[in-house]
Length: 448
Image (cartoon, rainbow, N blue to C red; front, side, top):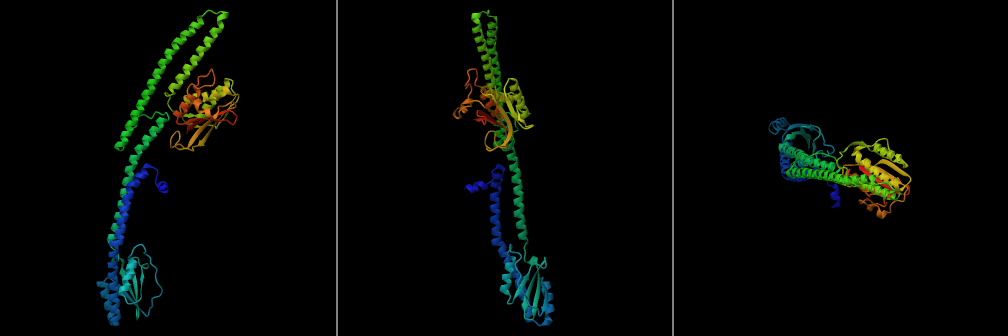
């Protein structure tokens, strides 16, 4: 069963065409076998028997009648039996001819019929003349040559039947392939639209086409796409309102702190309060970025290597030691601002815990066609961020992606959560591994 499953085609179109054509081909094969085994066999034996009977009758006449009657026998055989005769006195048949038409039963039937009706040695030549069959009969005085037209051994039914079988098979195959191609094209468009929408690309509503079930699926996809867009838009508007509501009292608090009278005994409290407000500002901004998910930015062609260099240069200006190893260019569809934020979070996390940060960009083949990004992608764009810090134990790495999970008192715990959210919106993923530098490696995968 497993071997049979491996032999079957994997695409829907190939399987559908196979389902349509297999019964038809089996039916035609059975009909052809019945024709060859029944009708053609009977017709072939009868036609061969007729020719063999005429040849045997002429040979018997030549054997019995005197030489003076041979010209009359030749003329009558040519006129009435459509046989061309010639006599070679003193000749002897040498050797045997091999069969040349083993697919059809004509040669075997003619040989069997001649063997039953002739009481002499004979030979049949199918090769010398494309329009005639030459039969040589050994007589006591020599060899009788008989040229019988091939049309006396063939029937037009054979050609018509074969043409009908082949023609109908080709016609129905073409119709089935054309029909299934149109149906599968609609499914492929639906799959491509779903894949693009899953990667964060705005493909718009797709046109329902194909069978009613495919049209129903396309309509459901369009409605789902619209509901998701509406949900994202409502969430963004709600978060904008929350941002305004939270930052308004925070601004008043800043103003109130600024207007407080300065005294040595209150300086420490004012500084602590200012630090708390700055932390609240960072948490609000980080939370809004995480909840928004960078969903308003559209995908467009961008250079991933250029983004990595920009983020690394900004980190160096902040005092971090960041090394970059990347090819000259790697263009791919991205949401550049979101990817830039993702890379900045990863590099920022690394430089907070380590002294040295190394970033590398390369393309790697996909080993899991069914992984993130779906089928149809053959390469990953891989970005690795390595550091020489303390790292994260293997059992705690997945928990580091949870929102607000942080190991630092001044952190929000949203950096890795935002990074994974952005990468998965592109159809990729982020993995945490042990770094060759001794610390933590963040391996980012994006479908090319």
